[in-house]
Length: 186
Image 1: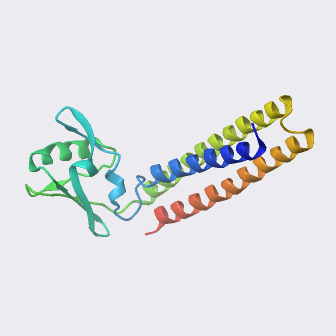
Image 2: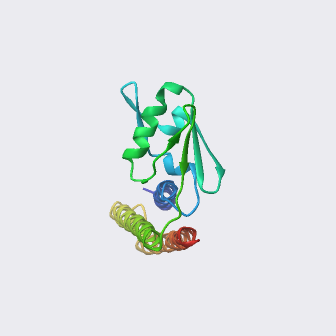
Image 3: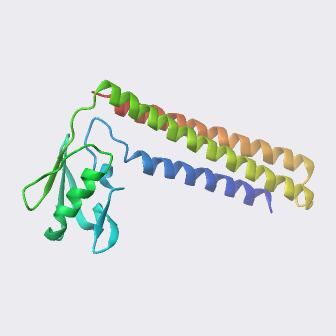
């Protein structure tokens, strides 16, 4: 495998890990309402587990309220049940046409719990990236064995992989700092 191919794979692996983290962080609750909070909730719709955003229009008309308007009114009760079963801890209010989720303010303990959860998620992503670095280093060593790169190129390749990891770890630190600030915001 060529040097540029290994570096490209390294960036791709790190970018995928970063994107995955950002996707799951959208569903972590902060002091404000966000439509992404309900994205991972699945509803039993004619025997199929379907995400809420495929069954309804989800909007945030106020900073602490989410409105869910189903495309098919018959699924309103199922959406309500799915939200109550989720770990959001919110009881939706229904007027027969739409569901309203009022987001209560987070207590100090809840904020700390969510901030800790975010820190754990970031740390898991950091571990995944380090595992990716190890895999790419193995590929670099295999390229050395196959004589596609020289020893100097192999050493430089290891250094470039490490530099790439450091760059992405800085991005992780920024994401952690931003999300924690968002959670702690009153």
